[in-house]
Length: 179
Image (cartoon, rainbow, N blue to C red):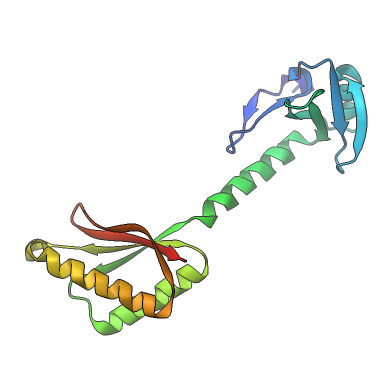
């Protein structure tokens, strides 16, 4: 495939890159693969310089005058961008813990240990209590059990309530994180 035939690509981080012949500026500021600034070149000279190194000329920003272009491997750049997006997505990951209406005190202790582990990793947690059959008629008791469970957790770990306790579908949920 011809170097100029690389399609206009939008990465998952919503940053669009122009590559080689897609760049429309007459002059560009060139940065090499190590990050060293080489200076301002005409577009033809910059593309020729990149081709000599068997790499691509990638426009990093068009906000500067002249636009900043980097000599780099375009495939490698896309891979790094996807990797960053995946890591950024993991940081705010939401874990789910389910408790039942008739959960035993020992099982609650186990759930609290699990919650401590997740909060230590910086994750948000959705605690859900599903109500089945006749349990649906006892929503006030279920709300009190959830509040008691949250207070048991708060005795061990300072919490921030991301979303208040509310009724959803067939039960109750609350979202918490470490404060």
